[in-house]
Image 1 (tube, rainbow, N blue to C red):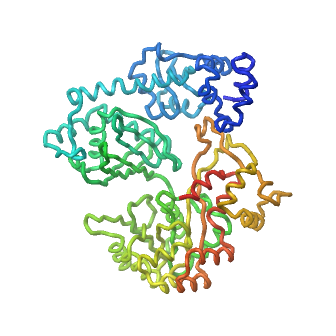
Image 2: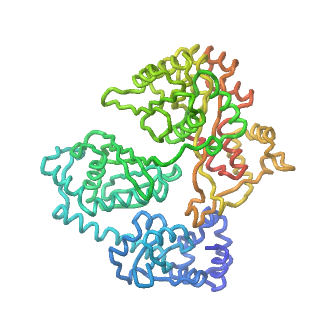
Image 3: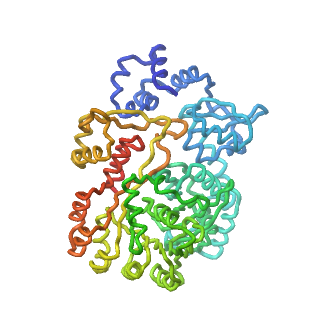
Amino acid sequence: MDTPDLIKVLKQKRIITADVVASLQNDPQAVRGNWEDLLLEKGAVTEEQLLQVKSELLGIPAIDLRTEHIDQEVLQLVPEPIAHRHKIISFAKTKEGVHLAMVDPTDLQTREFIQKKTGLPILLFLIGKTSLDFGLAKYHSNLEGEIKHLVGGEPTIKTEAAGGATKPDEVEGLKKMAGEIPVIRVVDTLLEYAIFEKASDIHIEPQENAVTVRYRIDGILHDVMTLPKMIQPALVARIKVLSDLKIDEHRLPQDGRFKVEKDGYRFSLRVSTIPVFDGEKVVMRLLDESTKAMSLEQLGFLPEQLEIVQRVIHKSHGMLLVTGPTGSGKSTTLYALLTLLNTPSVNISSIEDPVEYRIERANQMQVNPKIGLTFAIGLRALLRQDPNIIMIGEIRDQETADEAVHAAMTGHIVLSTLHTNSAAGAPARLLDIGVEPYLIASTTNGVMAQRLVRILCPDCNQPYKPDSGFIEVIAKEFNLEKLMEVYARLKLLPKGASRFEDLTFRKPQGCDKCGPTGYKGRIGVHELLEVTTDIATQIVQKRTAQEIQETAQNNGMILMWQDGFIKALQGITTIDEVLRVSKE
């Protein structure tokens, strides 16, 4: 709701004074527009007072869920993760429709989701944090009873992670629990909500007295559910059954996968389990198999970067490497490049771990170390089938690197990924792996480094000018004079702006379309090193990454952080996002 209206009414009703507002307006929460939590935290208002004022402003009745009987069937109309993240409880169902209690009734997207899911009209009610906590606790009151019933009281299953061997009858007990309705319901809810929120990963983390579930959304982890500790063995067992993992192995890490189909979408899930102090941690990565490869423009490349990419990938042979940490979008970029090169006149083959997207007419092979099918062996086999273009999921050892270099030397275009922090660091990484410098220089056409930044929600971002203190901080880390030169070269400076202090950027606010984050989606920031004669000479001479980067920059290369600041000036992302990914 509109914060100025709320503050105005609170002052009119003499619940708070102008002096209180003045004393708090420089607080970080106030700057972010989070006045409600700030006033409650400082004791300036009570929850009841705040609810009453909001109810009058919004014209929505307030309710205290502690006085309501909530049936489990009605409660489950809203999946628990959605209830947690969007602060919403379904507490009654009548002939008029579903009664929804919300902390933020202006969250239209979630209301539409619930209405579509139930097929019933929505009746809105307003609640505070106390009522919300009461409603969220109801999810587990019945679940704990069901789990206790399944295991005949408090669970006594001892796993190898705790130091004991799993006995046959205990294994059968786990299998039975994994197939029971409460556990299936929890896992299905986790998956359903992850798909709804476009999460990339699900983290299930055992604690001493509970199990925490977190989702990675747009690269950031969010808490979405806390489960009773007693469900942990059955929950892990259920996921292991789906992933075809050893249900009785708790002391060693395991990797598996399974698929789900939901509302016309197909998702492949990569599952990883590791033993930790309080049990087994499970991470599931979601890959949308129905997603088509994006174009380079959609991935966020600048026009002059696109020119370099086109020049590099249309050479007759050689390597183009994409670098960055895990989760920086390297595979997505490779698929976009393959789609660009994919014509009926060429043979495209790949060796991947895993195959994330299907590409029409491409021959995609998946590594399988269990049977000895590694990147190097698979690549050797691919070369015998005379491909024009080869994509290698990752160069991680000398054998794979040697095969990739050999392929690039013998008339093939090779695309692959490498783990380095910058484009200029790739030659040094290949040297460390064991590739000769003259081979690196003669086969590498280009190196692309990238990170992912969150995109500002287009509906609620606001303009602002960074203050002098903030500019001082970023000036210590980045060369802002050089940045202004790049802005000028690309003709991005507004009329009359000659200093960084003159520029206007944008910041997140948060609305019903993006949730409280103020961001929606992600885009890449890149730096592209074209291996020119100058750069090749430096590689042969084993020059440092810093020296190679300086030469490339003198030749016009836009550094990754500069690309980020360009997108910040264009209102695509924020300076804070650029600072966040620049530390990776």
